[in-house]
Length: 550
Image 1 (cartoon, helix red, strand yellow):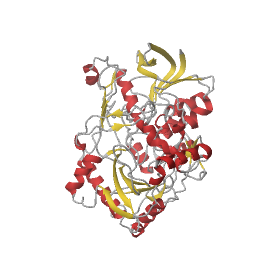
Image 2: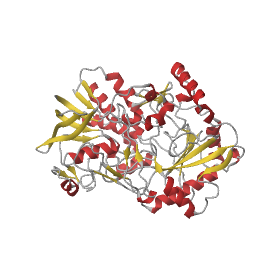
Image 3: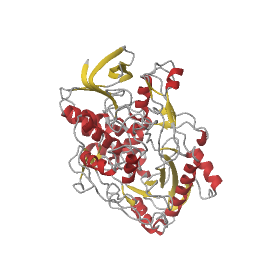
Image 4: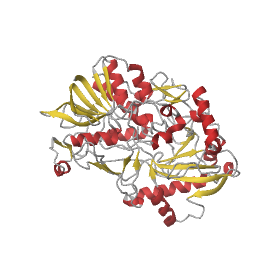
């Protein structure tokens, strides 16, 4: 089989690239390791945890023992279906801060400043409140602003105001810093994945071939040029496919470096140790692994305003029936309706902590609801100092890679999480929470000093599932860079990477939105189209950030 372009991975980025290349009349193969995105639970927003518990559409990679997390092995959930992680994630839609992208540009990634990426954020989204300098209203991806009608959501925002934080009308607009509503990739009660938004409209195009349940073994490289791929169906033989223009890896922050190394592109010593012929020595492949560590505080609710009763068997069934018939009710929400983007202290230029509240508290191991009215608040560390790596386990393409994030390896990360915990405790001590907030279930009101907090941080910190940065883009003089600012792999022509793995550093927020933006922007580059005109939109930054925390 021969195609113009082969796209490996039909996830958040690959679905976008397939759409744009097919619409430009190119002959495209889109190949995906997982099955099709079928089933009601894929569509139902509240079924997020159910999707994550299943390995049918979730790679569910088991990480290596993390030294600073008491040797725990963290599970890294990654989508394995059409739409990838956008088909199983929490549907949180947040772009990141403008200064994230200006930081990319300053690190040697020309064309990736905020003014450069904003047009592509606008291009991708169909937002009911769009059509202004910051938001788009006619893109493929439908975004909703939540109603946030649960009293806990309203109290959370009011408490932020009482604590002296700013309120923001749009986290994705002029002002990210502060407390406000949290947009979601949900439309009319259903998940709005890239499979729905980008693949569904073109699935019957004659110039698009989609192959699912196919595991890519390696990229074929001849005389320094990528010419195709080898893939296998389960239990089948190897099949060769040729690309006349480019092979594009969109397999994600785990899959893309994995395939590159299996193909002989990566750290030479590591590849030689595994008996893999070195095509190009790129030491940065698999390095620079970023993630957002997550710590959860849980509180009793003094009033019956959590959604716990609605999770009981018969009410859960009734809620499911309501959603099937009307696409409304408790099942039509991801239940992350509000957010606080705050700075950890004076001198921090822009938010580095993300606080989100859930109107239910769950057991950390089983994710089953705690059997009482309760709520929980997540502390996400948005710019961790620690960096991890991904390596091959062996030369067998079917073997999962070794993932070591090195959570809290840099002691500054533990300090920041400790600060975040104390800021949450201050938040729930505000007057608006007085008649609602009961005892702290976890870590517990008695856990106050640094040593005790550190013990709980080590035993309970986990992931927000935002792995990125393992095929970092940068300038040619940057020895750790793997791809140039157009996603082209250094040292191999005809090979490009387009997904979250090319982020120089993770964004200040959930990574799905910027991943889609990356795919939109680089699709223009693949097609030889000029980039969209930049938009110089002014954003808010606390004028007193150098001396004040809020």
